[in-house]
Image (cartoon, rainbow, N blue to C red; front, side, top):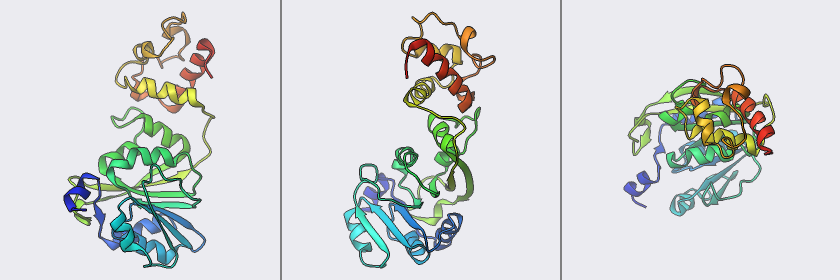
Length: 256
């Protein structure tokens, strides 16, 4: 596969071993850990993880890259496949320099699994989106999901020169640590969050008109949305704001 082709797939190989060492440190890798790595590329990070972990499981879509890593470390299992389609084995921690084009769907899929810590190297703009707060321009549906399940911390920014080929933008390392959610959610809650974020810059009172069934249920935003929420823009709403909106909609629309 040519470097141009790999660049189109979001493959920018981490070549600075000092960055790889710090990622392993942020994840506190030890000899009891089974670590999942996605997109190992040429193995700069894999090398570090293999010396620290009990076992490393890597998933690599590029057959040639995967075969080049085969047999280099006795405690590394290599799975050739698409990380978004492949069933993940059990693991304790995730440490990865992700292909940029799968950052969103990979992070969403990660939220469906149990893990102790994830240390992920993202494109800088995506990292800012993951660590955003309500009211930030980067606050999104994905941010709401990640922060519902995890404590999130931006560990450091990484210059593009640490990769080969270098990406067009700088990157950043983000650490995710699962937490006890503040409240329980269901499919309806996430449906409402997704629907409202399709109109993220509108006031909640206006965005609600795009929720199926709202116009015919006889409700007015001022009559059911908690005080002050109706006049917030969608991207200013906290997870708790969305919970209150979803609870009332569920009651009046008969959804669950």
